[in-house]
Image (cartoon, rainbow, N blue to C red; front, side):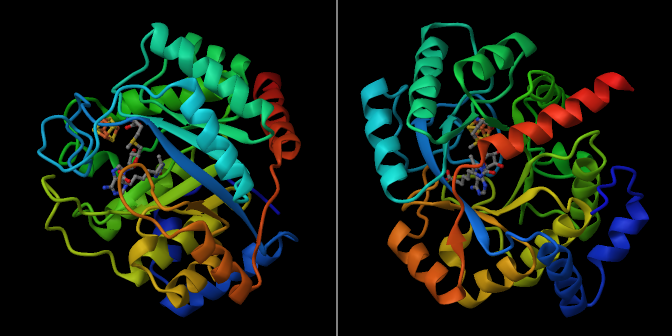
Length: 335
Ligand code: SAM
Ligand code: DTB
Ligand code: SF4
């Protein structure tokens, strides 16, 4: 399978705009070249620090400036996180993603505590992912050394649409954090959100930014906006299934080796809609009754769906992915 990072915008546009069932069929064909196509990576999310964030991301219930009904709390204790991590593992998750409502990481005792969480969750045998906002290279290295396997930092939308959604940090800031994560040899988890009032062209541009990165993100979350009361986007229309399918299928075709995660928005989707997304190449979900602050299907509901669709949860696959990163990074340094 050839992995390209020289995609032209017009090529991606042509793929994205194919008749929907042709697009899904083409993506499913690419997906089936992967012998593990019926395995789905199951990640569980913990909001280790909720709310009170200084940023102005228009979609986010955790921004301090919006009046939303969330359970604001400071950084959780190590013990509490470990209890939740064990529960996620018992439920069949292979990855645990810890999220903090921060603009950026600071070198303080909170970060030290997170490094301990990372080490201990890793020792449980789960892949550890963090999403803590912007990171310097040195902080990325510390996370990596503590055992962090992946770092989630979304580009969210196209560079053109970005400043209609966020004004408190730039697109380049985001790309820079992603570079720091890559340089520290963690795997990169980066994708975006649809339903932010963007056009199809913005969606294609966002996919183009991801698919022309020197190394594709190992995982690409596709979130449908969960409109939350009190945020500027609370009245945005629900994302239709065709938009989700076009995003997932196009991502699958242009980043054939990446894990594509059907992320926020599943609570509003039927099993049939989700089945189409898996058909179109989605091979990861967030499971557990809560995302960060909003509801999500329970593990039991998802395991029932997996049974119906003949899908199986994927075991932690640390070695395979690390080899990919190491090989790719070696190739970069040999150039
Ligand atoms: N504060 C860190 C940051 O912004 O990178 C980490 C946590 S932040 C909540 C992680 C991601 O969640 C955002 O980049 C965004 O893509 C997604 N997200 C937040 N609110 C959302 C919503 N209402 N609907 C869909 N996705 C959302
Ligand atoms: C991602 O792309 N989606 C997740 C995770 N990365 C951190 C977060 C979704 C948040 C949805 C809104 C909420 O629950 O607060
Ligand atoms: Fe803060 Fe992250 Fe929410 Fe933006 S998305 S307001 S940075 S928690």
